[in-house]
Image 1: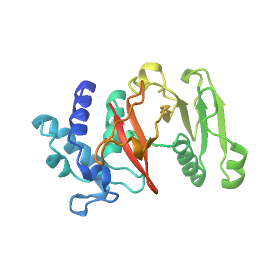
Image 2: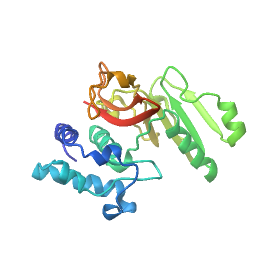
Image 3: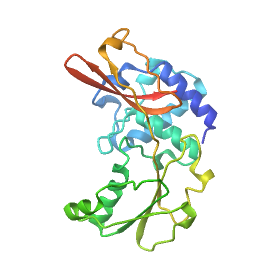
Length: 239
């Protein structure tokens, strides 16, 4: 794995030369698309650029497409997952990011329900990571075991079950450092609380650029730009 500093430097260079297609295209280029290796092939070749330091928009545009319609992944989400993986010193294929706070939990519960596997959800957050659990169980047939703990060390082992731990930790802090990963936990779901800002058409300086200020936050965000008659959503990484 690369050092975190090297990873962050690569991200800065990528964002400085971000290809327009990475932001505006809603489908993939078939000529550079290999569905089975979408994310892994893209990240392998992106990291290879660290040797040449060639981060021009033309070079980035030629990288394999990272579109994945199963998880709605693309180039920017793959870059974000790579950063999170480097911080936590795990392979990038072990990291999946979601905009939703609840979908990563429900995705596992749904898969386990179909497979007949129990799911235990432990959390150290102030509030339960899921709401209206009785309705989820009634409508979807989910069997949800959820419990608040002071920390991950209180989580027991469960045979023939999936154990999730939901926490809120700064994204630059490796989960291993605050003991959010133990042998009794199958997956840790880290919730980053993102504050946002609405930008209206009157605030745009010109059609091609705008500025956004979110105090004390660096990371992934969804920017909604409201123009006449439509709302444009953009996925960005704030640095």
